[in-house]
Length: 197
Length: 166
Ligand SMILES: [Cu+2]
Image (cartoon, rainbow over all chains, first blue to last red; front, top):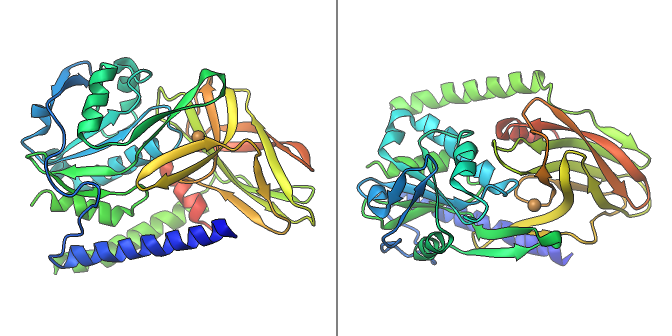
């Protein structure tokens, strides 16, 4: 019962957020994200692309970009989101070339460059996987205000709690808006298109 | 103006594609009855290459007079299989093993679907590819151990399957 009530209130909450968002799309009222109220996100970094080449914060700046944080040992949220992004980029066609799209691992220990290289083959080739030295990756995640936490399972296995929201940043690295997990494709594509203006 | 004219066309195309996919649904496994239980819409999200984990989903309906509990999952192609609760809380994905399994109250259905509770297959030793099907052993407190086929589906097909019907 309590769970049901929790769920229903959740539904009301998301419906409210949804209508607020639609309102912001039609008007000039931009709904701010409480956690990430504007401002520049991310510090300087040098990490590794899934193809083995180095990548730095400078490579991300200069064009609007979308960043998703996750890990390859994720059963659903990460692959689903990356599959969705793939269909959105497909829908945007060549316009998608004007947006940088990045997938930064929250599990650099297991997500080596080799694993990430193979993993990314399942998605749009414009999505760049990023991994690297554990401490450096974690520092970068923190600079993007990403929540990530190792959770132990039995037999020494572990999983990661992590931010499942896609960040949309402008060419200066300023947070503009986000796309939530499970958000419908039309709004997601509309949000990506807004970045091109 | 242009966009307005395009929308009906797009919707029709989408509708047609959906109908074609559903008519041609070779991927949907027929609902199966095991005692008082009906198992339907079983599927695994075909994971990306190199992924060592996969999520399984299904709908369990309990037509009995007693509550039923799914206590364990087993899959020969994985080192370990568990029942996991998952939720997105404040934009953060959290996943935890359900030590006591999932209870399906008498006369009710429980839907395991993306974004929520799932069967978690870990340490995969076989490639779970779209188009293939895999037998999973499910252990229930009353009905006992049953084997259910789980076709591996792409994200798009899985979404259609979950939408279709109940
Ligand atoms: Cu899981």
